Structure formats: C-alpha cells, structure tokens
Length: 509
Image 1 (cartoon, rainbow, N blue to C red):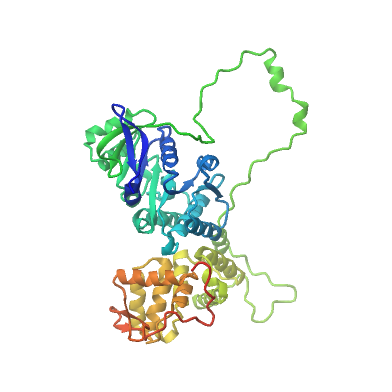
Image 2: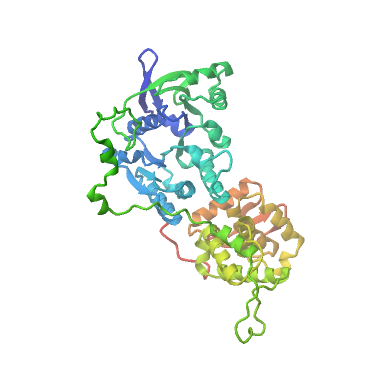
C-alpha cells in the first residue's frame, strides 16, 4: 500500500509528499546546523506517519517524549543495563509498539552504549518479528562518529557497529533508518552513504556544504545556497521525495518539545535599592538544602589498574616473616609465571556456567579485578587480546591441536569475521580438524552467548555467505560443516541435539 504523508509545501504552494513505503526501503538522511529546524522536521515526519508505521526514536536530549501523550509512544529510560535494554528492544519488535528511548541525563559514552544495546536488540529479533519499523536517530554524529573522540574505543566501536547494522543491513530486517545530524563531516561516511533520500537544511561550513552538494548531485558552486536557507527550509532529493532537488518548507506540528529556542525578554524596570536586594540574604535561604555539584565521573577501571601496575609497592613482609612459597609483593614476575596466572584467571571466569551469556565488557572487568587480586604484574591485557583468548578458550581446543598447522590457519581465517563471531567459528573449525560431530544449534548458540537456535543457524548462513564454510546434510538429515581452506569437515551431527549443560529452549525462541 502506497502512503504519501504531507511534509509541508513546495515552491508555488503545492503539497510536499513523502512516500512512507519507499522510505522504508531507501532510508533518509537529514542534515542541518543547530537552529535550522531539523528536530521540527523529524517531529513532522513522526506525527504524520504515526498511524501508518511502528516508530522507534533514539532521543539523546529527551525532546520527543511528548509524543507519548498524543500518539501513545512508550517512553524507555536509557538508565538501564545493556541486557535490560536489549530485552526491551526485542519485546518492542514482538508487540509492535512505538517507543522513545530517552538518553537524557547520561554522559556521551553511556548514551552510545545504551543506544547500541537497544539497536542491537531490535536487529537481533527473530525473523518472524521482522515487521517494518521507522528508526529515527537524532544527533546521529554522536552514535556514528567519523573519528574517535573522548569516549573509549570499545564504546565507539559498539555504537558505530550498531548504526552500521541499522543503515547497511537493517532493510531486510524491516528496520528503516532515519538519521539526523548537525555536521555531515562528523558523521561516519559508511553510515551516511547508505541513505538514498536527503533533506538538507541550513549549514555554513565549507566542508559540510560541499558534502551536501555532492549527496544531492549539485554543482559545488551551488553549495552556497545552503547558507541562505531559512529555518524550516530544506532541499529534498530521493526516490521517496523527488527525483530532482526541490526546496521544501516543513509544515506545522501538533506536539512540542520540552525545550525550545531561546527568546529575547526585556529586562525589568530599574528597581530601587538594587544593592540591598542583591547583598541582603533572604531568611529562607538558610533553610534551603545545599545543592552540591555532582562529583567528577569515576576513572575507568582499566586506567586505575594500569597505574597500579606501573607503581607496584615494595615488598612488605608481615611480622615473623612471610609464608614459605608465598609470592612477594615486590618480586618481579617472570613472563611464564604471569602467563600461567592469567590463564588460571581466565579459566576461573569461563568456568562459570553463566559466563557464556555475559557480555565481553562485563567479563573483561571481572578478569581485570581477579588478575589484580592474583597480583599479576605488568600492564592490563588489552580488550582485543582478551576477546581473542575467550574465543579460543570457548572453542575447547586441546594443546596438541592448538600446536598444529591446521589450527594456525583456522586462527588466520577467524580474523575475517568480527570479534563476537570468532568463538563460534573456532568451535566449528576445531570440530572439523578433529573430525568430531558437527555441534548442535544449542552448542553454537551458547558459544555466541545466546539461547536462540535460530540465531545459531543464521550464523552458519553468514559464514557460508563469506565463503568460509560449506554447510550440507547427509541422507539422514544430519548437518556437516566443511572448511575448504582447511580441507577438513565435521562428522554428521544432529542440529537439534540438546547438550547436557545446555539450557532448555527459552522464550526468546
């Protein structure tokens, strides 16, 4: 069904229509400096399309929560754990409820992590719930930055990966990204490049004007026009809007943001005895509670541990001497001993049955704390190396296989997949090298950190698309995974087999 919503007026007074069905397939990029009417445009789009399509708004400033009063959007507070946000996002898709994820009050890094967890939760929904959703991300340059900023590299990669999935791979899952940014130059190019519809507002910097002109197919000399656009005026182009650049004046909206643009207000008339009013305290001031500034944000655990490792205290023997064989506080640790202790800490963490379903960031923090308690000297293990070791450990490879040339090649091949998929890939590679039965869906899902067997099957399909494996079945319906580069394949295995330590089928199925 083709639905055209009214975005405003064109030159001459004609109505500017936006084809919602086409927008769902081709995505939208909105650009405009602060005060250009960008948020007003998004509000017009959301209000006009509220009755036609499910909506999810990533709102860093809490401006769009007012949609809940008139249109019934559920307001989701971003001050939750990543697991909670992912679960809410999954239920949002299951029950087709429009919502606003408000990130107001969080610092930039917390906003990035919360938005990434929520977007990934929607992206990972089961296929039967891939209904069309309009996903609006305001201030997208925060969540998909072109370069690293003051946030941690882990948070930046997590947020950028979620935004890339939304814009590059979200269409087949029913996710239609609408991203708005103040600066095109600050927005990651691979995210912006996936949009086929554009609404360009007022901008002043040459680099942003040049990128806007390039996206609209305009001559660079015409880029100067973006400086002259009035508030609420945009240039539109795209299959859902127009086949050639057209100026649009965005129409009125029915709801309003909690914040508004500052307005001039005359000063009050001159008052007598101004100095007495200012310097004489009000008796009520002494009864008011003192509002103290919030303490500075805590330092990251990795920074503290790194500093402690650089300044290991000198040896301090207790009265009466230390116990025989106890490690001295100031004693230098050999590389072999350090490696042995790190391996022991890693084995302790992964030995917990619930460790498979915790995020890498949570496991990493626990690993750092336990390593410090074991008095492991030296700088903390980097996050990338930790993820690599976790992936190898979860594969269950033995020492003899780990020393073989085939395993070395498997490690090289695993670099071609993302960090979160390496554990699954190495699990399958180990089974092939040792001619073991193909792991079941439950075993693969556990290696990925989920209970969903459907997601496990999608991972196998992804590996096959990348040309890393070939999946086929024998006459009895058992699955075989072959690795052409390793010249090895697994033995036939029942994909529906329940492992002894595997949890029962969850509601996520």
